[in-house]
Image (tube, rainbow, N blue to C red; front, side, top):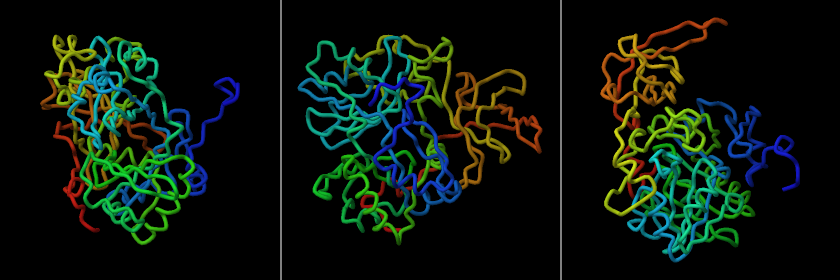
Length: 391
């Protein structure tokens, strides 16, 4: 990196950029963690359809990655996060969150146990100072390795078939487990993880093997509908799966300016992650004493207008919450949403979404019925089937 100031520094390019830029016919880019990330390559509807009917690749390189290793790595991670890391065996992955001392949510992410004393933590935001401060007193080494890892998400019902055609047999790989293969003089790690709620995998290698991996996958996937997707299509899929995104569905505690924007894991529907029996972790005492004021719910909205950002009202009069993410689901043929609501409205009943729909340069105010429903909205059996069926 040169000494340019932040406003003169262009967005970084991932190791896959020569391929993603060539495929990005819409020239649609957005920033993600300081990198240029594709929003839509060519056609949003086709990209979403490929997630549910074929196979897709998504460039994961901008996702922030930390290497955590040492003889006390398990103890450290048990202190940092809410889940019991001792239960995560080598070769396993789990979803987790971590809080500040007041029990407010800092971020969520996936924790990979690469060996007994070595882990990789993947998340949305950068937290190195917090991770280092939390390591005081533990024999553990922590470093960011975002630029040292090239990662692709391979998702969709034909994803296992594409991997098999590429010479990577993942038929025995169970959800939230990983395996390794030799590839092009190096190594490829494959984890059965993803952000679509469908059958899928994430591929991890070194930056020098990024382009060979891309080309190898697309040669193998030519007859199986493989195509690249951008963040817009992935966002639709994660909404159907009922997954949350830091910075969209909740504001990380260190970034909250307003006290009433702070949320706990319980208020974000993540209380099931907390292991109260494992011993102390950051925020445990505060969470024990906390009385939730908010709930995080899935919703179906009448009509076919996307309800993102809509304010929710009880009886069309009293503010009850806000929709944090929404889309028209092509799979379900419904308008779906994720929302923060006051706890007294978590069961639903007489809730309405105030939506502003653009109608020939003018916005029309719509009050549409909003019903609380279970998440996930879409959960095909193939996402967990082992071995995965051929499609």
